[in-house]
Amino acid sequence: MSGTTIAFFDVDETLIDVKSMFSFLEFHLADPERYRAAAAELTGMAEAGVPREETNRLYYRNYAGMTEAEVAGSGRAWFAREAARDGFFHADVVRELRRHQAEGARIALVSGSFRACLDPVAAHLGADHVLCTEPELVAGRYTGQVLTTVIGEGKATAARALMSRTGARPEECFAYGDHASDLPLLLAVGTAGIVGDDPVLGAHAARSGWTRLHPSAPSRQTTEELTHATR
Image 1: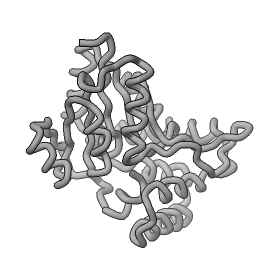
Image 2 (image 1 turned 30 degrees about the vertical axis):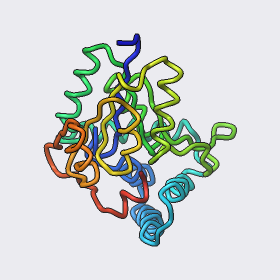
Image 3 (image 1 turned 120 degrees about the vertical axis):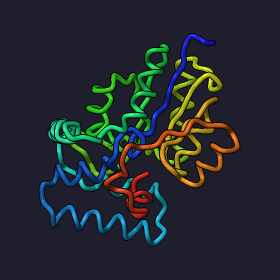
Image 4 (image 1 turned 45 degrees about the vertical axis):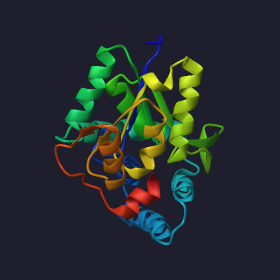
């Protein structure tokens, strides 16, 4: 094997049982009416067929004008609340992650979410890399614009770039996801695993002998509208 092996993990509904972007936005805004309006706009666009990349970008308008420090602090508080409840982490997936760590692999979290949500998750798990959507910051404040989105094919692009930078051979790397939009990431490595019962991923798993993991409990946020708005 090469000197570097990476195990890539999607986050929402793969490692954790919520869609972090919506769960965090509700927590951070602390305003039910404002949250419902923001969620309704995004889900309505998804239902109308607006591409996932566009709805993902529109999500970040909700943070325009807020400081990076303020949002990051809110992210840590959100994570502390969520991590304290049973079922936030999918135990079988975390065990798989720990197995890779024990075997010397680097861990990379790959998500359309952003660092305010993901950095606390990465710190808790001891992940080495966070590959995620990067909202624009100017003078320490979010502008509402996005520099890079990491959803769909963007996950595979980010994973390939990391493998190239670190000298990891794709055929010796691993990836895990729960939704058809994770397929490009799973196909970018030598060994894949799926979480849950997505039919597209299930068909690939059956043909390719991929590992199948099952969450211990149904996700609390599984609507197709939220899926298409955020991945």
